[in-house]
Length: 188
Image (cartoon, rainbow, N blue to C red; front, side, top):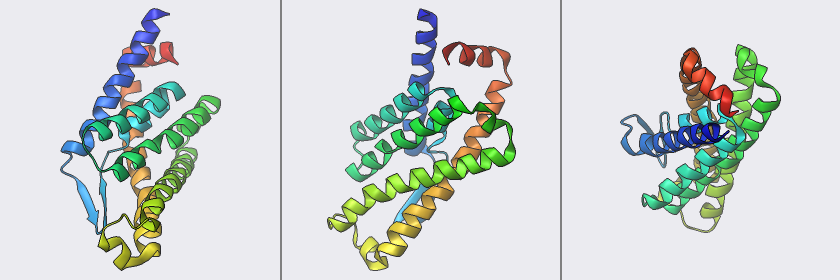
């Protein structure tokens, strides 16, 4: 039992580290003024979501704390904190229905659901700052519909689904290794 907790803590810690590191060093950033998206920035959280709700929530919280301690703007830290919602709910659904990841169509629909949930949470955070007058001029120049709804909302759905696909590829590759699959099975 103690070994399972150590494995769970170790995997969560490694995923938190990866989740903090990717946005800091990734050379692949798509900038659509005033928003920007970093490829693979959600992969660690999504992989954690495949493991268990506890690991998913821990990694989402850990990455949010990492953003806070890393000196990122508060709006980015709060957007990262909202990942607890999609990671927790998504992981809970996967515990109840693990077969979702066995079907391409079900995986794609699940990814879309997670992306929409992800976007709703991030749009809510950004909207508070938008209506509080705390955003850059570029957001107000383009207006709420384009800068918040389209760029943050629709952009987050697309970004989330791309990262979900990447996480799914990495996850399936890891699970093909018997030793990793056995470790994950012990901690679930």
